Amino acid sequence: MDQPDPRVSDLGFARVDVDRAARTGDPEVVYGAGKTPDQVVAILRTLHQRHPDRAVLATRLDPVALDVVARALPDAATDLVARAVTLGPLPAPRGTVAIVSAGTSDAPVAAEAALTVRVHGAAVDRIDDVGVAGLHRLLAVRDRLTAADCLVVVAGMEGALPSVVGGLTGVPLVAVPTSVGYGASFGGLAALLGMLNSCAPGVTVVNIDNGYGAGVFAARVARSAGQAQQRSAEPRG
Image 1 (cartoon, helix red, strand yellow):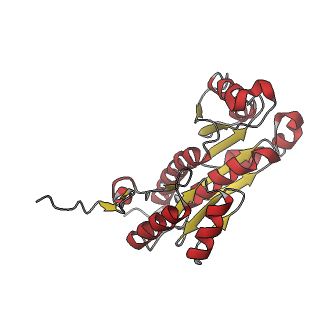
Image 2 (image 1 turned 120 degrees about the vertical axis):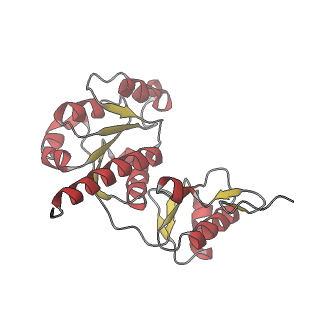
Protein backbone atom coordinates (compact mmCIF):
# COMPACT_ATOMS: atom_id res chain seq x y z
CA MET A 1 0.00 0.00 0.00
CA ASP A 2 1.36 3.40 -0.96
CA GLN A 3 2.39 5.62 1.90
CA PRO A 4 1.14 9.24 1.94
CA ASP A 5 3.67 11.81 0.75
CA PRO A 6 4.59 14.05 3.74
CA ARG A 7 5.47 16.83 1.31
CA VAL A 8 1.85 17.10 0.16
CA SER A 9 -1.35 17.74 2.10
CA ASP A 10 -4.36 16.30 0.26
CA LEU A 11 -7.50 18.33 0.96
CA GLY A 12 -9.63 16.42 -1.52
CA PHE A 13 -10.02 19.35 -3.92
CA ALA A 14 -6.31 20.27 -3.88
CA ARG A 15 -2.94 18.71 -3.10
CA VAL A 16 -1.12 21.44 -1.18
CA ASP A 17 2.65 21.55 -1.55
CA VAL A 18 3.72 21.99 2.09
CA ASP A 19 7.39 21.24 1.34
CA ARG A 20 8.07 24.15 -1.01
CA ALA A 21 9.71 26.27 1.70
CA ALA A 22 12.29 23.54 2.32
CA ARG A 23 13.09 23.33 -1.41
CA THR A 24 13.06 27.00 -2.40
CA GLY A 25 13.06 29.03 0.82
CA ASP A 26 9.55 30.31 0.05
CA PRO A 27 6.27 28.62 1.06
CA GLU A 28 3.49 27.86 -1.41
CA VAL A 29 1.15 30.75 -2.20
CA VAL A 30 -2.60 30.45 -2.74
CA TYR A 31 -3.75 31.75 -6.13
CA GLY A 32 -7.30 32.71 -5.24
CA ALA A 33 -8.83 33.20 -8.69
CA GLY A 34 -10.99 30.21 -9.61
CA LYS A 35 -11.14 28.89 -6.04
CA THR A 36 -14.13 29.17 -3.72
CA PRO A 37 -13.71 31.24 -0.55
CA ASP A 38 -13.94 28.08 1.56
CA GLN A 39 -11.17 26.45 -0.48
CA VAL A 40 -8.94 29.49 0.03
CA VAL A 41 -9.57 29.34 3.79
CA ALA A 42 -8.78 25.61 3.95
CA ILE A 43 -5.51 25.98 2.01
CA LEU A 44 -4.40 28.97 4.08
CA ARG A 45 -5.08 27.05 7.29
CA THR A 46 -3.10 24.05 6.03
CA LEU A 47 -0.11 26.15 5.03
CA HIS A 48 -0.20 28.15 8.25
CA GLN A 49 -0.24 24.98 10.33
CA ARG A 50 2.87 23.79 8.48
CA HIS A 51 4.62 27.20 8.63
CA PRO A 52 3.29 29.00 11.75
CA ASP A 53 6.50 31.02 12.03
CA ARG A 54 6.07 32.93 8.78
CA ALA A 55 3.32 34.45 6.70
CA VAL A 56 1.50 32.62 3.96
CA LEU A 57 -0.13 34.56 1.14
CA ALA A 58 -3.34 34.32 -0.87
CA THR A 59 -3.58 36.50 -3.99
CA ARG A 60 -6.26 37.56 -6.49
CA LEU A 61 -9.18 37.35 -4.10
CA ASP A 62 -12.52 38.86 -5.10
CA PRO A 63 -14.52 40.92 -2.55
CA VAL A 64 -16.59 37.93 -1.47
CA ALA A 65 -13.50 35.81 -0.80
CA LEU A 66 -11.81 38.68 1.06
CA ASP A 67 -14.85 38.96 3.35
CA VAL A 68 -15.11 35.21 3.97
CA VAL A 69 -11.39 34.87 4.72
CA ALA A 70 -11.47 37.85 7.10
CA ARG A 71 -14.36 36.32 9.06
CA ALA A 72 -13.04 32.75 9.05
CA LEU A 73 -9.44 33.73 9.84
CA PRO A 74 -9.58 36.77 12.13
CA ASP A 75 -5.77 36.76 12.52
CA ALA A 76 -5.30 37.24 8.78
CA ALA A 77 -4.24 40.66 7.47
CA THR A 78 -6.20 41.94 4.49
CA ASP A 79 -4.80 44.22 1.77
CA LEU A 80 -7.79 45.51 -0.18
CA VAL A 81 -5.72 47.25 -2.84
CA ALA A 82 -3.57 44.18 -3.51
CA ARG A 83 -6.68 41.96 -3.28
CA ALA A 84 -4.70 39.64 -1.04
CA VAL A 85 -4.40 38.37 2.52
CA THR A 86 -1.54 37.11 4.66
CA LEU A 87 -1.73 34.76 7.63
CA GLY A 88 1.17 34.60 10.05
CA PRO A 89 4.10 36.91 10.86
CA LEU A 90 6.09 38.59 8.11
CA PRO A 91 9.76 37.55 8.06
CA ALA A 92 12.53 39.93 9.06
CA PRO A 93 13.52 41.76 5.87
CA ARG A 94 16.88 41.35 4.15
CA GLY A 95 17.65 43.78 1.37
CA THR A 96 15.28 46.34 -0.16
CA VAL A 97 13.07 46.35 -3.23
CA ALA A 98 11.80 49.64 -4.65
CA ILE A 99 8.33 49.25 -6.17
CA VAL A 100 8.04 51.97 -8.82
CA SER A 101 4.64 52.59 -10.38
CA ALA A 102 3.67 54.93 -13.20
CA GLY A 103 0.23 56.01 -11.98
CA THR A 104 -2.61 55.46 -9.55
CA SER A 105 -4.36 53.08 -11.96
CA ASP A 106 -1.41 50.70 -11.59
CA ALA A 107 -1.87 50.55 -7.80
CA PRO A 108 -3.44 47.05 -7.53
CA VAL A 109 -0.53 45.41 -9.36
CA ALA A 110 2.06 47.50 -7.50
CA ALA A 111 0.41 46.63 -4.18
CA GLU A 112 0.43 42.92 -5.04
CA ALA A 113 4.13 43.14 -5.84
CA ALA A 114 4.88 45.04 -2.63
CA LEU A 115 3.01 42.59 -0.40
CA THR A 116 4.68 39.66 -2.15
CA VAL A 117 8.11 41.17 -1.54
CA ARG A 118 7.40 41.50 2.20
CA VAL A 119 6.02 37.96 2.47
CA HIS A 120 9.13 36.68 0.69
CA GLY A 121 11.52 38.38 3.08
CA ALA A 122 12.67 41.75 1.73
CA ALA A 123 11.90 45.35 2.67
CA VAL A 124 9.84 47.60 0.39
CA ASP A 125 10.25 51.21 -0.71
CA ARG A 126 7.10 52.37 -2.55
CA ILE A 127 7.63 55.03 -5.22
CA ASP A 128 4.27 55.86 -6.77
CA ASP A 129 2.97 58.11 -9.55
CA VAL A 130 6.27 58.73 -11.36
CA GLY A 131 5.17 57.99 -14.92
CA VAL A 132 6.96 59.34 -17.98
CA ALA A 133 4.36 62.07 -18.52
CA GLY A 134 6.14 63.97 -15.72
CA LEU A 135 9.81 62.99 -15.81
CA HIS A 136 10.71 65.52 -13.11
CA ARG A 137 8.91 63.31 -10.59
CA LEU A 138 11.11 60.34 -11.46
CA LEU A 139 14.34 62.34 -11.48
CA ALA A 140 13.50 63.65 -8.00
CA VAL A 141 13.67 60.10 -6.56
CA ARG A 142 16.74 58.87 -8.42
CA ASP A 143 18.65 58.42 -5.15
CA ARG A 144 15.98 55.97 -3.91
CA LEU A 145 16.24 54.00 -7.14
CA THR A 146 19.99 53.57 -6.83
CA ALA A 147 19.76 52.72 -3.12
CA ALA A 148 17.55 49.66 -3.73
CA ASP A 149 18.87 46.13 -4.22
CA CYS A 150 16.24 45.44 -6.89
CA LEU A 151 13.54 47.40 -8.72
CA VAL A 152 10.03 46.41 -9.72
CA VAL A 153 8.73 48.90 -12.29
CA VAL A 154 4.98 48.78 -12.96
CA ALA A 155 3.37 50.61 -15.89
CA GLY A 156 0.52 50.41 -18.37
CA MET A 157 -0.28 52.49 -21.46
CA GLU A 158 2.81 52.22 -23.73
CA GLY A 159 4.97 50.73 -20.93
CA ALA A 160 7.82 53.22 -21.29
CA LEU A 161 8.70 53.66 -17.61
CA PRO A 162 11.02 50.61 -17.22
CA SER A 163 13.15 51.78 -20.15
CA VAL A 164 13.58 55.19 -18.59
CA VAL A 165 14.39 53.75 -15.15
CA GLY A 166 16.74 51.22 -16.73
CA GLY A 167 18.62 54.08 -18.35
CA LEU A 168 19.02 55.91 -15.04
CA THR A 169 20.39 53.11 -12.87
CA GLY A 170 22.18 49.77 -13.05
CA VAL A 171 20.10 48.19 -10.27
CA PRO A 172 18.52 44.83 -11.29
CA LEU A 173 15.08 45.61 -12.70
CA VAL A 174 11.97 43.57 -13.38
CA ALA A 175 9.25 45.26 -15.41
CA VAL A 176 5.53 44.57 -14.97
CA PRO A 177 3.15 45.59 -17.76
CA THR A 178 -0.39 46.32 -16.58
CA SER A 179 -3.67 46.08 -18.43
CA VAL A 180 -4.23 49.82 -17.94
CA GLY A 181 -4.76 51.84 -21.10
CA TYR A 182 -7.08 52.78 -23.93
CA GLY A 183 -8.27 50.45 -26.68
CA ALA A 184 -5.02 50.17 -28.62
CA SER A 185 -3.22 49.03 -25.48
CA PHE A 186 -4.98 45.68 -26.05
CA GLY A 187 -5.33 44.89 -22.36
CA GLY A 188 -1.65 45.42 -21.61
CA LEU A 189 -0.22 43.77 -24.72
CA ALA A 190 1.19 47.08 -25.98
CA ALA A 191 2.98 47.64 -22.66
CA LEU A 192 4.28 44.06 -22.64
CA LEU A 193 5.71 44.38 -26.13
CA GLY A 194 7.19 47.78 -25.35
CA MET A 195 8.98 46.38 -22.29
CA LEU A 196 10.20 43.30 -24.17
CA ASN A 197 11.63 45.64 -26.80
CA SER A 198 13.24 48.00 -24.29
CA CYS A 199 16.42 49.66 -25.51
CA ALA A 200 17.68 49.83 -21.91
CA PRO A 201 19.87 46.79 -21.14
CA GLY A 202 19.13 44.52 -18.22
CA VAL A 203 15.33 44.89 -18.16
CA THR A 204 13.60 41.62 -17.23
CA VAL A 205 9.86 41.36 -17.98
CA VAL A 206 7.05 39.33 -16.42
CA ASN A 207 3.57 38.76 -17.78
CA ILE A 208 0.73 41.30 -17.81
CA ASP A 209 -0.46 42.26 -14.29
CA ASN A 210 1.89 39.68 -12.71
CA GLY A 211 2.86 41.64 -9.61
CA TYR A 212 3.25 38.39 -7.69
CA GLY A 213 5.84 36.92 -10.06
CA ALA A 214 7.81 40.17 -10.08
CA GLY A 215 7.69 40.36 -6.29
CA VAL A 216 9.08 36.87 -5.81
CA PHE A 217 11.94 37.51 -8.24
CA ALA A 218 12.81 40.87 -6.70
CA ALA A 219 12.67 39.57 -3.13
CA ARG A 220 15.08 36.77 -3.95
CA VAL A 221 17.50 39.23 -5.55
CA ALA A 222 17.25 41.57 -2.56
CA ARG A 223 17.64 38.78 -0.01
CA SER A 224 20.78 37.57 -1.75
CA ALA A 225 22.17 41.11 -1.81
CA GLY A 226 21.32 41.63 1.85
CA GLN A 227 22.93 38.34 2.80
CA ALA A 228 26.08 39.24 0.90
CA GLN A 229 26.25 42.62 2.61
CA GLN A 230 25.84 40.96 6.01
CA ARG A 231 28.66 38.52 5.29
CA SER A 232 30.99 41.29 4.16
CA ALA A 233 30.26 43.25 7.35
CA GLU A 234 31.11 40.32 9.64
CA PRO A 235 34.54 40.53 11.33
CA ARG A 236 37.10 38.17 9.90
CA GLY A 237 39.37 36.19 12.14
